[in-house]
Image 1: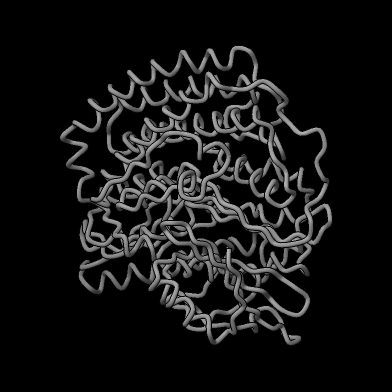
Image 2: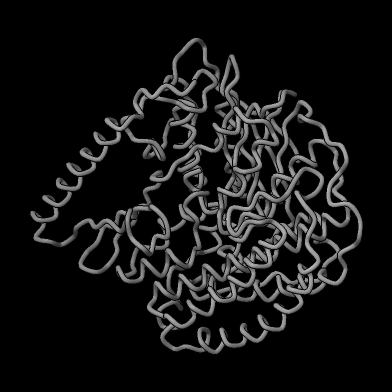
Length: 514
């Protein structure tokens, strides 16, 4: 990865050059130092992966949060809109030229900047009173919009989808601007389940950060375990044991299939299809039974460790996988008949929620949603890690960029994951599952690592000062960028299609409100 320090007035020029060369903004965050706020932009290329880190220093000059300013790149990279709002509310940096620089995750009335080192948890501006005040402000604003629409003789109006709605699969609000049933615009509003893992991880030891990994993407937690292990092993120069590597990949791919099954069942249920929902959960329960054999857990896995895994697999683990493989191959054929060949499903999803390659680049979309737009990027192949370079598997893609394509790509990915599992289940070597000795803390320095989760690129940026605790830990989660892209996917559809488009992206709210 190349690293460049640029002046504040040069960042927009650098961003334009990166976009012209096919780089997307994978991650963007900040680090609080005594004299300045360091902005850290991580750019990546679709293929082959070419990483570039660009830094900008924003001097504090004795000022207070909110007075520190730097140019916005949100007009160049659409993904920067949310990234900059997040940095603004957590660090107090103002981005000049940003079209809507308001709080993203915290109440707008909050007066705190939680990721500054000076913040020690004071409740000022973030207590219940402030939250209630914000709710009242939202109500007044909605009434104003409603009054305006009445004066326009009901030509257009606003409707809230959520935050309590089954199709949002979490606490998410989508503010829809409608003309009759037609969507003019839609704005996702997040932050209802915010828990601030990044602040928590600053006061925990590196070992104590493990439980956080299983509580971000709670339906695909093994990939997040993998991501943290890769980062630590990269920083500390550790090489996992061969047995641990095989177990890790098996666990991750089984969890990837279970995640896709949960998505497919609930997505189809949102569209009114009941039978596939029960089949999907039946198959998913079988996978969870297998994972529970080794981990003792069924959802928020805390199983990986630096240089290995927490415990060895039991004797019945591999036979259970071997029994599951032929059963699931048969079930995949059943899914194909029930879903792909269903004319109602085709009519509800084909041509709906188009995500162009250009918008995918601008928003930093990754994972199946990107591959459904014809871009065959998968970090397991393009930036290989663990055993993936030795495995035979394909990266499914589609070119239609619609909701149907996003379904089809995930369906094919389950087939490929099953292929990976089949290659490994008979080749688990004997030996230890963890290293005898590991360092207690990371060496001083900055580290970035990424892996392919069920929803896309999961990246982690760490600043270590050599102590037992991370100085700065940033989590780049795929759903955060993927959901942002819905802004350009909703206009023109009808209200009933919003559920289908939102479901086709496959978001998990805890990794967004992290």
